[in-house]
Length: 509
Image 1: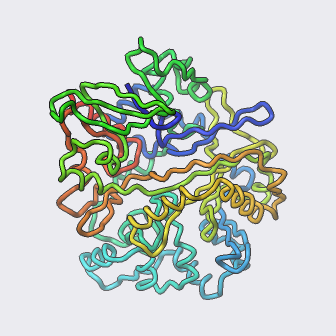
Image 2: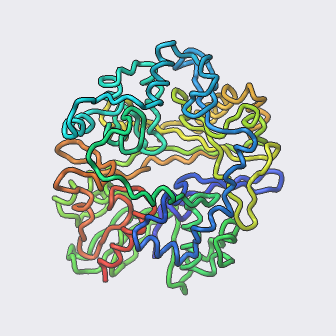
Image 3: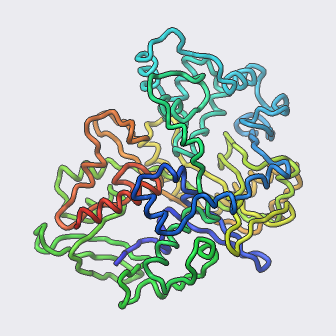
């Protein structure tokens, strides 16, 4: 029995659908893709194989050159509130020929070009140990200001650069993380660490139209065959699920949606006893008894739900502080304005949405992606609510509160305002061209653990420098309760979710 507090299965792998003029358009509202699946751990690769996902067929479904064939590429949108006037710059990193007209001072333009040329070693003369010490003790923003001599205009430009990947700004992203990600300012700096496996360069991601929601759909169909027709990754994209089949008494697997667990305890407090699981569904409160339980939810919530957690484990569970984020999908009637302006993906450093881009150009099975600027398409917009200047965990907490308080009207007004100002010169009219908006709020988005003593965030667990790993302490078995979910690895990736599920099940056996 799977008790899922969401109204659909898949968790952060969320599917969005729009219907317009009798045609269905599919986008992702959460997990975007399988990133570098050829380097997945063995158990994740096995799951992918069992779901018949053939990575080598990616090129058959992904329209690699579609947007470029219409002259659409990368761009940067400068907004008047932050930079003085609205201005769209086309070209990589906003450094195309039109940069001359950007609302930046002459010195800022020179700094921007110098930064992205990335040819100067700002730590020249330092030993590797000294370089590492600098990068480990400064944020990327502070490093650029102190060692690269970057001024406030360009610092404002890069503030939201890490938002889409790490859900944090340059003010709180460690400089060593920026270095490891290949962000500019380090000029290929050698820190004495081994290079990544060169084969990883060929490890391209795998995209479904709905992101990794199709993986969840494949898993559910494999577990409950009657829930959806078909047998391949091609037909899963457009398969219509019969949700009444998810929770049938005769099924070996039952999935009960919109069911939030509020109490979890062993009978009579004995850790070798059965577990009573109480959950709320609608206005009903129910309790089921289980021999074994896997908790795959937010770690910090468990002590409020389960009184059986040992006191020392409560602190470890509380180390998980998730980053908030939101993905907004906008169906537009055509994308002629983007083709006219040469925009496929825009970085918007001062705007409400820091990224505006097309959703995945994927055709799979019966689903066909728009091939012409005259056809409707989904735009994917990202907004990461944060509080720059605070430590990252505090930014996440403040951002989560802000996200919960932000109305749909605010999202809608920002969609219409930002797209109108950015794409208006290409002929876009928000009142005419927007056909639908879906906002996906993730107050508990990316999984991170925080060291209680230092306040360090486990951005990348493989590079964690402390002896204690709070996420490992947090996932220790409690009687007949074991732990899965990405909090258990401090790594919000699909392969981590698979690994933690596998570990949890085998802890029970």
